[in-house]
Length: 311
Image (cartoon, rainbow, N blue to C red; front, side):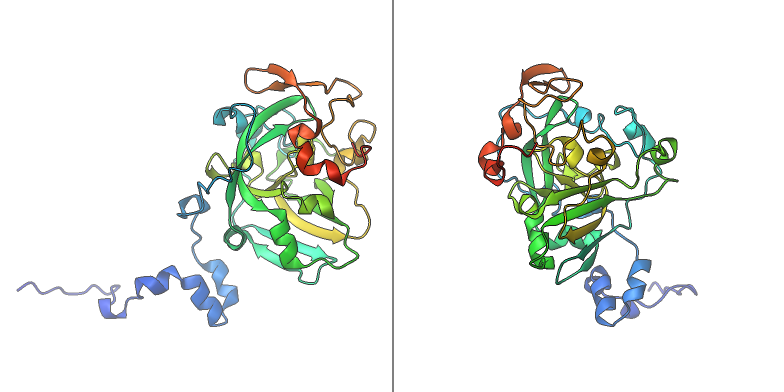
């Protein structure tokens, strides 16, 4: 008969934590009131969590073009907090920390919240949608985004009657985002805003994934905005704060160059940028020229919100 002599650091199997309890260790500690200890627990990377990615595709939203190759969509990004060179952003994001991450929701709401991202991404069911994406620089992509409708979060925080707009702010970490230091003339951190009815529109998404995977850092990890009828400058990345306001908040590009970038920035082929036409767009990666569609092709979903002047 084999006799096992336990080492000094071993514990008897009868004293080991049951697997079911270990897998629920965060909830168990919170239930016992040890909320401060949960941050000390090992965090499972989102990419390793089964059931999140890929999410089920919502087939209501269809495309008139082929999907952009993944390598192009994650390799061509405007993210000035890292660099002005859109093909080098992916090479400058290595030091940017996206875990842990919190999103604070405050302002004119009845239920202000501070969401831990890991909890947020499970709180609201994720789905995949195929959307056209149009940059104000006249290039375009077609992307499979994974996220949840902004309306779901808005309903949970319950805006007060005076709330008419939402303001969003990007992370501000000069040590991790080298573009902030090299371009101090911009009023960092990046800030954007929507009217409340725009945010409640069914197309508006808080996005956490792309191509069936969690968002890469260069695409705005861990959470960004997508409003596909607007130019991409409205789709703020790496969001840390959401505030509900009564008055219309400023937006970064409209503040620094209002003659070139409208507050609404709705895609409009009939309204040229002061330095180039918006009548056609170049499809990444082959730069094929196609006509630009009003509201980027989403007129049936959003045109009713506007009088025709909000561009």
